Amino acid sequence: MNDRKYIIAGLVIFIAIFTFPFWYNLGKASPGPDIKLTEKAKAAKQCVMPTEYMRAEHMHLLDIWRHAVVRNSDRTFVNASGKEFTMSLSNTCLDCHSNKAEFCDKCHDYASVRPYCFDCHIDNPKEKK
Amino acid sequence: MNVKYMYSLLAVIVLFLLAYLGVEAAGLRMLFGIVIPYVAVGVFLLGVIYRVMGWARSAVPFQIPSTCGQQKSLPWIKPNKIDNPFTPGAVVVRMFLEVCCFRSLFRNTRNAIKEGKLIFEWEIWLWVAALAFHYAFLTVIIRHMRLFTNPVPVCIQMVEKLDSFFRFEILTNTMQVGLPGFYLSGLILLAAVTFLLLRRMMIPQVRYISQAADYFPLFLIFGIAFTGILMRYFTKVDIVAAKELAMGLVSFHPAIPARAIGGVFYVHLFFVCTLLAYFPFSKLMHMGGIFLSPTRNLPGNSRAVRHVNPWNYPVEVHTYEEYEEEFREKMIEAGLPVEKE
Image (cartoon, rainbow over all chains, first blue to last red; front, side, top):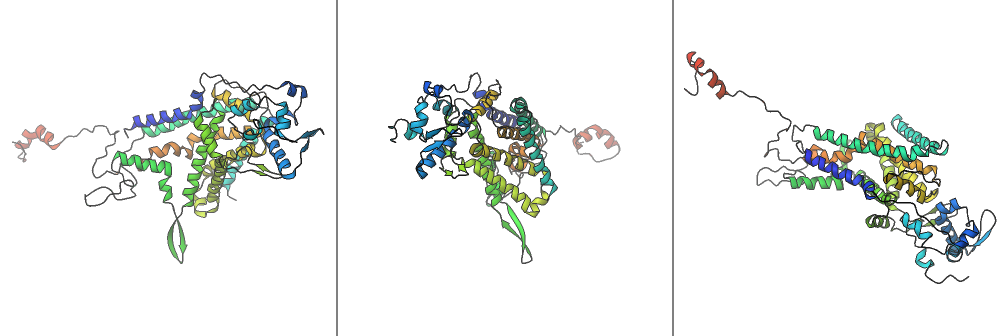
């Protein structure tokens, strides 16, 4: 058919859509998130689990904690090296990592993740033991 | 056992091992994380352009719309405006319904012999599964843009939010699903691709016409969905490192992040790259082809408008008038009748 101009127009539109991430990020430097640890977290050296595990699976761990506390009223977590922690987002995690904007939010914003943990756990008064 | 799907399955398993061992054992992160993705995107783009321009160059010597209704003819015969479109506008409506709603698949029938008679039954499940598959895949692609854009556009965040609206959290001692938010599109994609695969394997008539090239993309897409779900809910990967790799690729500053991303991630990426590079040279090009099928995009106006192939060169003709003009005197001499004296 002599519809080549329509075909080329369609092809150009398709290529424009397909290459969207390339031109959307053009000229924008996008370094990975630069998270800051608080002095307390730096002093502790290690989180409740190894750093690699925490990076990938902290949401999994928090879910396990929630399950243990809410369903089984078990509030003590013992990690691989035998150290004991109280299972509490507000009292344990956010005690060291008290800089939510500089720590939690940096990666969550970068990866476009909106956890609903903080709907309750940061502005509200801390849980009582 | 059928060699056609065994070969396809074997090919996907080999691809899996290539990527997994290539990264975990041989440490070829540069190859699988940077070189192959760029090559795959390049092959995809050039391949699509090549294929579509090939179709654009093809002659369409005949008006061949598939007629699924009464063509417009005499004023007292009611035409079917959409199934046998007469105007370009009606063609657009027909194409829209075809591309977005898979209308011709909706008419799918299956035949069977019941009580010694051959009967045709309406079969809707192919249409349902195809629709679910394509839209789930589209949603999956759109929400993956969160790993390729920074900051993430609001519309992509909205798609993500809609996709994960269904709160579905299971935690047992052995399994944990639903945190991070559960994406419906991933599950629907996996379920639909499984159905389409089983349909090809189980129904004898469909199995008979299925080739290795039909099974391979299904196995490959199954692998993509499976590794994606595996990474999200089961063996987690460092998502921030994954995004750093993706952002490096799309901003043309490719770098392998210092922190390790699991081997499953590279398998997922390699499967996607294989799909991209395979796409232009396979049946998957129906994505472009559906727009260019002459049986769909031509109006059914063959009684009213003469279709001329634009490739036709002007044919030199010698009409009778010209012939007579040339030989009139000789014809009169020979006593032959002429139209003009």
